[in-house]
Length: 165
Image (cartoon, rainbow, N blue to C red):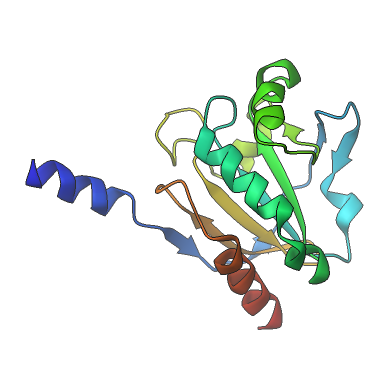
């Protein structure tokens, strides 16, 4: 039992990288019936939040907590949640947790381009990944959180420090 607990703790440690690159562009449909392109946010910082999507209560709670935190908007930071689901698959979770932000619907292409697949509990799905895109379109930071939770204030502190650097 101790060995299993140790393995669980070691594999749920956050992993982060500050390697910079031009962020891959994309246009994705949303749960609101619109489309969103990364280029729509040029000149503003964006956090991409890749997660396991439908059926992942932790992912939905994370998104709800971020959505309810006014400090992200006050800092001028947009959070774009991205899932590999259809609208019909993810909408019940959004309703259950009171999430009103449109969620971007990925067929896996964008998740693959940002190297988020297989980083969580399911091979072929994104884990619990945050990626910071600076106002100039440069990927400044990414963080993987297999524990399935990151305090919104810690996320905000991390990205504002990266933007100030």
